[in-house]
Length: 276
Image (cartoon, rainbow, N blue to C red; front, side, top):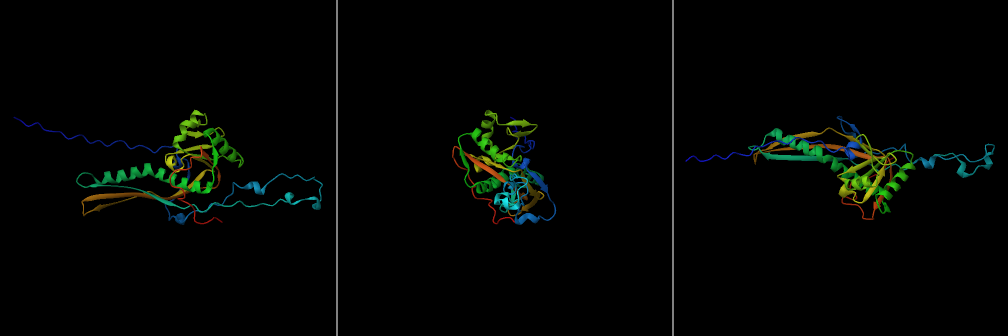
């Protein structure tokens, strides 16, 4: 009698997927650098587009008024805004390892790169969320997402600029139900044209808090993968990593829907010093 042979299951590599394009990483204005990273000690942003309300105003005295007729409120004198605290950098990484008898080196390196590609945006969102919560100090309490967008859009309107509204991905369905999302191509906008940033990393890191900022700016180095064998256990190891820094010129306002407070990570990413 012939013993039936058992076939091994076929191993198939799944196709690599692209990161979602609705989060912070995809919507940030990035500067890619492959030279020595001068910003590893942090970045101080010099403000030019915000805080002008203290340096502008209407001219109200009579055109023929003498100098003696002018009060302190009539003096045309600029007052510079406070610059944000230093934005500190971070290094994101992902790793993979496997028994060399069961996997190829190319597979280990590929998995390390792909995990980093998908998870890096979430790490960056958690990092910036902590900084936003630090800068926001006391978010305005609102009862629902409509009230939240109302407050945030009003704050951005007072700057006369178009900005971003950062929110956990759990708020997208409610915002859509309230007709607060306007599609423009692949982008998601508020009724007044501000960019929605629905981040998976914001789900817990921001929680019930929504934040309005100026457009985010980022500087990032190249992604590097460092492979190497672990001879003691006959394994092959690969680490993919990249250093970057991200920040914003101005935080316009923050709201807390229902007063539930933020999620985890509060206080991380806070700048150590003040800008010039």
